[in-house]
Image 1 (tube, rainbow, N blue to C red):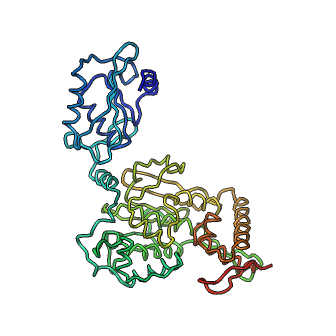
Image 2 (cartoon, helix red, strand yellow; image 1 turned 135 degrees about the vertical axis):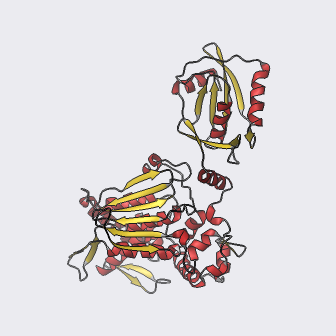
Image 3 (cartoon, rainbow, N blue to C red; image 1 turned 90 degrees about the vertical axis):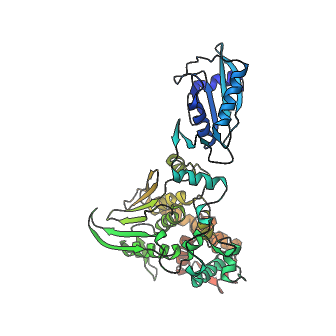
Length: 448
């Protein structure tokens, strides 16, 4: 670093990665620990909070003494890069630290992380998440000490294998338990937390979901409590919500009427899947869905994961990080999620194409809420245009490759498989395309 570079950093002020100190103190070590647990940063000694340069008086031994004090008071010990530079004729000391590879780092048995331009004392949940990220694993990969293989259903595993074979178009030649070992859903034939939630035989209080149809904030006219495996819960969530939606029948001149619900079912399904795979199952509170006349509210325990901010989320400017890696992988293996980190963008896209206003997101430290509104937007013409565009893409794709799979078509039109299947069904009903032969081994044909 040069004096000119340091002057530019000072001019920009304090931030998530820069802090000014007039002199060396314990707060310097606290900040370095916070940087170590977040994205790294620089502590600049000899500058006031208002960017005024005061400088420090040091001897040859001074800086080495500070470095030793930092090492002695941190665990694991951190070693900073040190620069002594001159700014405005005054000496400045800069301690630079990278994001530490083994986290969390402590100062006097306290753990800090950097939030915007201040240090935040981490709670137990944050410490646990930080440790799991460091060892590149997640809670659901850990062995469940309270349950064993007798608590999961072989029939549910067989059903999962059927879905895996359909999605991947290949036969599984393993026994149910060996297959789960192969996917690392079981570890050496021992039950993980994730395997328990995915295939629990009976009651599972860890994954409870409450759903209600409300006429007012206090008046409930129908409700259901779910406490079983997450795949069954997903189907039950969709069935209950669908039961309480309004549906209109659109006459198109075709033999069959088209159904249009007042909310896009694909967006609801995407939100429900995201609730399941991103929920913090260590939290004692459950997931809650409230259906009102004009909106649906989805509440989930567990805030944004991996240092993600609401701004990053809504700008789709982030690297996806999964709170529950095993659950995410299990869902992806059967096509319930297609690309990691694409869920939020897909929800916005689906709502836009359906002609309703964008969803609203409310983020708190330990919770996440999505509100889906019934209100229509002014984009119905765009929606019709998108439908025509999708139809053309599908027809062109089939003309180019009559053996193209539904999964490949879904990628071409940037839709989920459920929406894609519905589009293909409508094109078949209109006698625009037809399917020759079975799902496996058959092919598509465009009707002239």
